[in-house]
Amino acid sequence: MSLSGIISAAAQVTQVSQAASDLGASSLPLNYSSTWTITTGVGANQADMSYSAQRTIPGGGNDDLDLAGGTLTTLGVVQTFAKIKAIIIEALSSNSSTVTVGAAPTNAFVGPFGAATHTVILPPGGVFTARAPGAGWTVTPATGDLLRITGANQIYKIVLIGTSA
Image 1 (cartoon, helix red, strand yellow):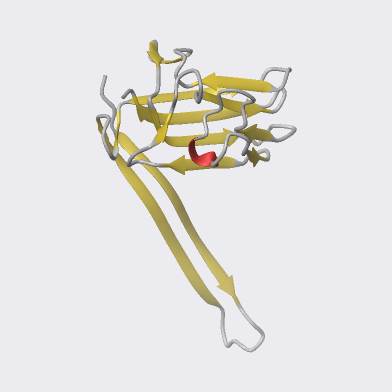
Image 2: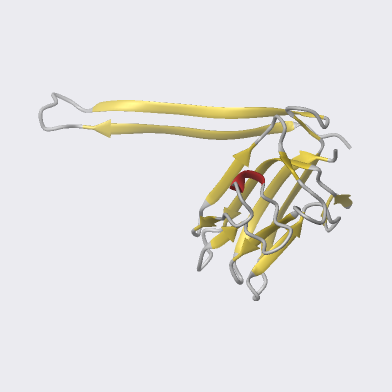
């Protein structure tokens, strides 16, 4: 299976100000974009796997995604990630509470979090995105492969891009 596409972060805003001493309004446009164009493969700046889903966190409060355990599927194909190169997680704006990403109590995928106990908290409508297209973040089967998402009965969308080797 091959993979191609674009992962980007972008902001396009204009700030307008009119101070009392100004003769007219002044504005400052901001156009920012950072893009990774994916080519298929397992090397630097390449990826060959993706996973995407909208998931509901069970009433018990945890949704543990096993990145190397063969439990995630896309197009009917079991996904076993060796590296994660991009993560996008969105807490739906209709949620009643926050969604916390990271800090599985055992076998935690550290990835961009810095340590196994670190987390990112997303309020309703919040989005977390991280990208490491070069080397990626290592997924270690059985010892560093669980991505925990917490928030009882909350709904989130997730996109993972990575490699099989």
